[in-house]
Figure 1: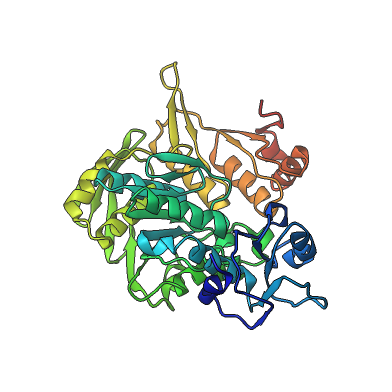
Figure 2 (figure 1 turned 90 degrees about the vertical axis):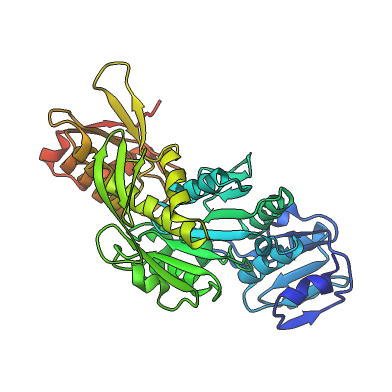
Length: 436
C-alpha cells in the first residue's frame, strides 16, 4: 500500500519527506522491522518507541510515525508527526487491513469480572444461531472454528486487525471481544467500529497500572464514550458505576439487572451445583451455570442477543444449551462420592468473594470448603491481603500458594497475602509455594 494512501486515515500535524512510496508492513516493535516498513513510535507505559527510531531505520524502515520530531532527519525516510501515535497506530492498522471491523458486527465487553464468560457465551450463542463468528478473549481467540492462541486480553492493534481481517476472510458476520482497561487506555481499540458495548461491573483491579480507581473507571468509560450513535451501550444497573459508564455515550443506552428495575431483568428461581433456573423478562429458562454472578452474566448475554436482533424465544432456547467456560466456575466431580472441585479464574477480591459465597450457598450444610488461592506477580499488591482475608473468613480451610509470579519471588507474594491475616487466622492456613 502507498504511504500517502495509508495516512489519509489519520490526522497529520506535520509531514517531512516523500510519502509517495510503497510500504511493506506496519510495525510498532523495532525488532520486527524489515525493508520498506512503516515504524510507529508509541509512547508506552514502560517503553518509549521514539528511543528505537534509529534502530528501525537501520533495519530498513522508510517511514516513521511519531509524536516528537527528531533533531536530525534521515534522507529517504518520511516522518509523519501526529498528536497521539498510540491512537494513530490503531487507525493505520485498521486501514492497512481494509477496515475489517466495519465488515463485522463487532461487540466489545468490558468490566473487571465476567468479560470472558459473556464474550465466549455470545460467541457460542451466535454459532448456535447458525452464524460464522469470531472471538477475541483472554482464554483463546477464534476465527470461526479455528483456535488462535491468546497472549493478551486485548491484542495490540496490528495483531487485532489482522485477526479481524482473517474473520472477514472466513466469512464471519459477528465478532465478540473482551476490551481490557489497558487496551482502552493504550488506544489499542483505536480505529475499530463497534456495533455494541457491554459493561459488566467494576471493582478493584489493575491499580498497579492505573494508580487510582478513578483512572481505572475513566479507562473503562472511554470505550463507551467512543461508541457511535448507531451502536448500543448495555450496562449493569446493579453496579454503582453502571450509569456513569454510559452517561456520555452517543449510543443507544440500555440496562440490565438481577436486583432492580432495568430494561432487561432476571431473577434466580433455583440454584444448585448442577445449574440455575432463571426467570428472564417473565420467561423461565434452565441453565447449566451456577451462582448469582453468572445470572448477571447470562442476563447480559440475553440482552445483547436481543439488541442484536435475535428473538427472546430463540435466545432462551440457545441459552439453555450453553455450558460454562473453562476455568470459570468449572466443576470437576471427584471419584469419591461427595467430593467436588471448582476451578475459577477469580483474581480480584470481589470475584473471589462471589465464587466462595456461591459455593457456600449451594453446598450441603455439613460439607467443608477448602479454598486454594494465590495472587499474580507484578500486579496490584494492595489486593493480596484483601483476597487472603476474604478466603479465610468464608472457608473452612485455606491453602495459600503461588499463582503466576512473573518477576517476583513466590514467597514475597505469599507473605503479602499473609500480612492481611491475624495470627489466629494464619493457624487455619496452609502455605505451599510449590504448585507442582
